Image 1 (cartoon, one colour):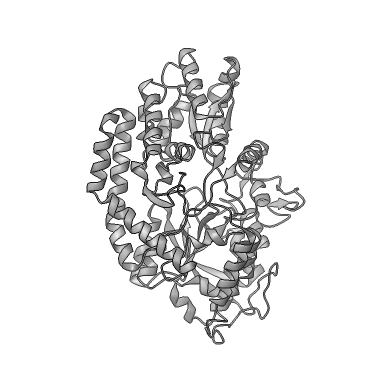
Image 2: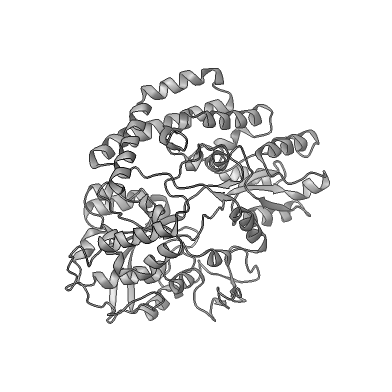
Length: 547
């Protein structure tokens, strides 16, 4: 069995071709949808690689998440250059990061939401499908040549199947990645390892051995491993990455259903033997005082302070945090300190990687279909989010102003006065804060080559290791009917919450593993069996319908 991710993996090119053919036959042309009254401002001919430019000045309303790290500014170069290139102005409805999902629901429910809703993660569109306000975008991908091209080139048909609802359509345009991108792992104080003649660990067993050596060798008087990202999800990153190693999703990646490749059916994740083994491993770290028990509940600031002050020597990280705040603060407080982000440790599953090639994306409201500018809107979305030129623009900005060089030639670099994520520390202006580029509302997805342009050499080395690992195949979809979704919703959250609560108790030793069978029976009392039966019924129906 392996970690269930409904949006992972690789499918054959032939399958993608069949998928595209199916979409085309279900698309605007063959389905008989008449768009003759919806082409105002649209380009008469728009293909892969073409620069989209509306034939008249247009304004499209869009929901915009305002990140506190780079709050929206009306004078960003992003806005003026976007209008210059596309003849489109975006009318933003600003929503703070802290309240984005709630505000999005309220705006849509009141009928006041803008037509374009980005920053929507796969699965979040489901309630709006049930209420009938989301556009079945799969009907209109013939209007989006760049989207279709990347799906075909990167064999993403199977991945996109996981977005399909019970009616066979999908209602979200996700960010598309060429390959599974692994970002989160562990950061380790390598100066201490060098001093103690210790090696960087490659497996979770080696992580345990390293922590024992650090503890017994007196490298720290407290816990050698004190983690962050435990709020609001206890062990959010730690259980996520170790869950992949054991074949049982946890933390951020937890899902109630996991596909059993041998039995060819879904099983309840929180009751799996692999899930139990993962918890036992983490409990052993806590019991031996190698892992700080506060890791699962402390604030990020507390965890970071322990690490940069030298109290702890291992902490969760991603590409950005290993540079700032870790390295930046460490070199100030502990001269000579060095830190690296290590490849994700390997566990019982072997050298595998799990993750999604689909990222958060764009939901379009159904009423947009009635606009005279609908075709132009879909062409615009296709250029900005899915064309090579649009993705370079969103991520890097304007050549000669914010960057020089090119992606294809491998020469792209920031302008001398521009910085982002520590790529050009001498830069006095920030690419996102001062110019509006690398804004999470617009900048996601793309080729592996484009992705690597945002990484320094050390991160590229990390990505090379992870790219060489086997990608776990996509688990089969199980789209619910409206009635099934209503029932599943009543069960899913209570079950997930109960698993989370008890997982923490097992890890911290507040519940003995001798009570595991009792815990599994408690899950059954909360309808875990009925939930899995519902999932398998939906999966079998979809497989039969799809053939």
